[in-house]
Image 1 (tube, rainbow, N blue to C red):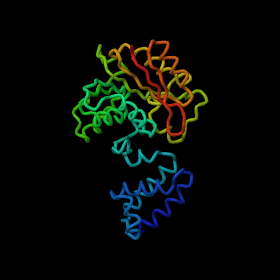
Image 2 (cartoon, rainbow, N blue to C red):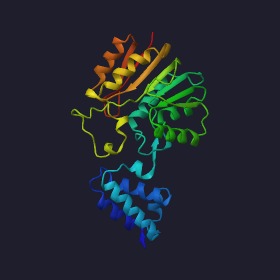
Image 3 (cartoon, helix red, strand yellow):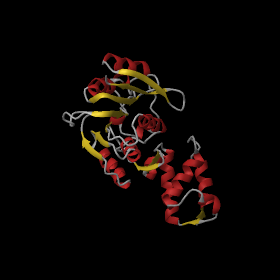
Image 4 (cartoon, rainbow, N blue to C red):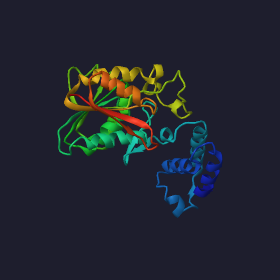
Length: 278
């Protein structure tokens, strides 16, 4: 049998094409062995059973092929919450954590706001907001039944009772309900244009990524419809590509939103735009 030290050294050599070979190797092996990564440093000579060694080699093979670590482990951390993910859902990203943090700044802690998470995917936005603002009622919608299954699983794992889930093509299944806040991370990649699609992104559901012509099709549909679903004074925050800030601001202004602003991500790129209904 091989030790965890030997397996990790082997894995790092095999994952040189990754941006973080050691981290990937540790996360995969820790998930497989169901231990914390700190054990690798405290007990580096721990022997690993042959059948688990074989499973680890298969994980490495899939990771070398570009499969994201989150899909191989079935989990991804988002705002200190471990979310289940699979290939029905996008993998939650740090940039979207900023969307949640921005929203929470505008939602009082004890306010019973009605909040819509439009295109919920794994439920990361809805669950994070529901956990931080238990007085709020969250409505989470997605077109994908597979994504909604995962989102419900994540809400149940947090024992949250203030989220309801609906299968809907944007606002189509919500009748005439209005909200105090609408949060949305829509598809905004220009698949047919010049936007690069990474090998990892190719594993994620295209329906959740492909924003159509110039990556703008979904945004053009959402913003005009959303203003009619906001209560007076309610706000919308939408995530978008780094080069879409001008476009999104124009969409807000041409649809009579007020207080339009854009906020940058960790890399200094315009990433989230916010506006209010008069």
